[in-house]
Amino acid sequence: QSALTQPASVSGSPGQSITISCTGTSSDVGGYNYVSWYQHHPGKAPKLMIYDVSNRPSGVSNRFSGSKSGNTASLTISGLQAEDEADYYCSSYTSSSTLVFGGGTKLTVL
Amino acid sequence: EVQLLESGGGSVQPGGSLRLSCAASGFTFSSYAMSWVRQAPGKGLEWVSAISGSDGSTHYADSVKGRFTISRDISKNTLYLQMNSLRAEDTAVYYCAKDRSGGWGALHFDYWGQGTLVTVSS
Image (cartoon, rainbow over all chains, first blue to last red):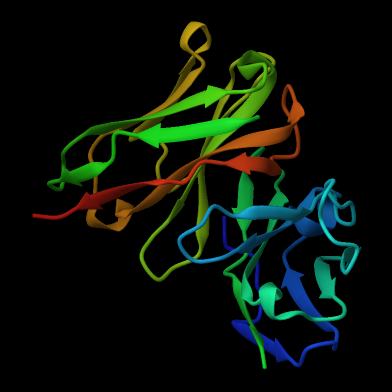
């Protein structure tokens, strides 16, 4: 199972919006509405930000939103804040009843 | 409060074995799928294995199939990962993670442990 494709890095200034893409295949992203997004600060446990493509867990800011079109899912962060600087990973359930992660995207807040 | 506490990491030679444990509390352990996820140094997250909360069925990434075994002891609220025939590429921080949904879900993790480091080197 190949990793989902994410850009290695994205950046934005405080207050701006950024979008991170996550491209898979019809056997994972395109085949299921089971895409999740995680925020990972180095040395800490990853945090679930979005599940089932576009749902936010309780306590996650509404500045974070998710969507999907075909084999590509996207995470949008609006009103960028310094604390958003982290690594972001997408994941998707697969047709093999397994899970595949994206390669990760480093978000830099300028 | 949900807590997941991993233990059992350490250094081992190639070809060796190690068993990781994850002590869970704060939720009905038997009802939720649990997974192991790892992160090699400087690399991204990689899902390793999962065990269903409904029927205890197990699932593995191709990279560990036949070498690693996931299991759980419901009486002890503990998840395990038995790792055999370890390779240098298995070096990573290993996290245990709780699925957000009961039974067998979409493998989205609402709680993670802090991780335990496994180093495979001669």
